[in-house]
Length: 92
Image 1 (cartoon, rainbow, N blue to C red):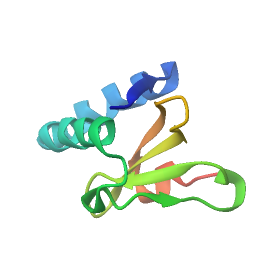
Image 2: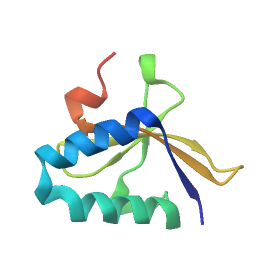
Image 3: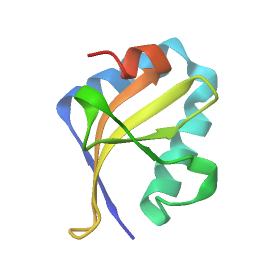
């Protein structure tokens, strides 16, 4: 089981995201729980990012929403960085 590390930025962004999208709260919590248990689960659609976000990964919250993370599985940690729409999270 991995430990989720909430950055200050992620906490603030997640709070705003859930305030704007209250219907996604249950899915958000499900994705975070799944990340803790098995980050490679196919439903999460974990994928590495390229360009300025190289070294980071993203998982799908919905078809159009993503959570950007840093995987440090050797330490058993997953650092949560950003949540939002595809365009918001992949901005430079």
